[in-house]
Image (cartoon, rainbow, N blue to C red; front, side, top):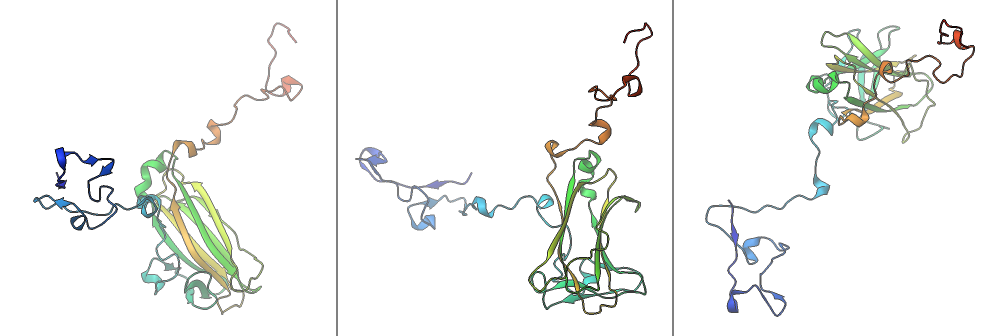
Length: 268
């Protein structure tokens, strides 16, 4: 056990006399302690400032962005989290008129009629227990900006099984946004419970250039966060949350056509 002691010289060995605290630096406001009244024991204990609440960082699993290089600040992209599709599109790191920070994503070319695509697979297998109980939500968001009327951007978030089956997805379709000047952007977001069996979440960025070669549709600050699970946030599937009784409130008539049957004895 670490020990910190202070020898106080006073009449009758009391720590207070006439209302005055005789302990030097008893409120720990002055550091280092060794210079202000206190002596460490001989066993080698040490002192450290306790961090305040403002410096507390929640557990990484529920506070960090699960997307690698979601802000486009590291290049080349294929070495920092992102994969170009196999059809041959190219992606640029735009350094002027960015959405956030020093760089933004933009498509530079596309293969024929197919849109330019770049994606990232996020491994969420560590959340398997909560996912299996339908208690694990994930929040996706991205900032986008369109500079002229030609390119259309699209975002798809796929919840995939270990065998690569798409169990569920969020798809914006192609976004025909109003063009913005530098400094403005639109945030696209989606929050949902991962379906049972989800092992990987694939985030897909797509652009239909329509002749644009100047990076006129940009993406930035791509985020995927795992929300802290809790029973209060769980929404049961519809099969377990709806009333299974047809016309239980008697609002539909005649009753014998809406769920109910008269007994055979002739009651009405």
